[in-house]
Amino acid sequence: MANGLRIKLSSEHAIISLIYVERMLNHSGQDLCDISWRLILLAAVLVAVKTWDDCAIFNVDFVHIFFETDISTINYIERQFLAAIDWNVTVRCSAFASRYFALRELDL
Image 1 (cartoon, rainbow, N blue to C red):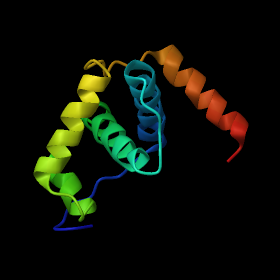
Image 2 (image 1 turned 90 degrees about the vertical axis):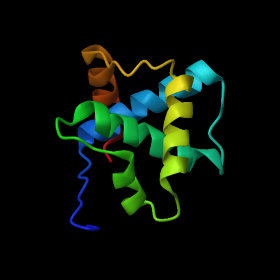
Image 3 (image 1 turned 30 degrees about the horizontal axis):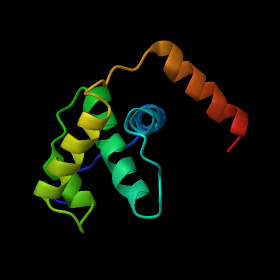
């Protein structure tokens, strides 16, 4: 917790983030690599938290968690990610359920 701030990630955030990462990779043709995967995952989690939670989450909240970034970098990453998924943040129940059950089969 930094400055009284707490962002709690749930399993729903993880599943939605996975869907967003898949969507971004399919739409952009980009691949995950040693350099890009962290930024892509950060953007996916940021967007998932903002779309799933009822409480207001701001990009500056993520700066408190990822100390090596600043607000302009977070804003840029979010804009680029949203453009790469064509601003489609809708997650169908069927997509959520299929990822949920696929992850359960992995038995992590």
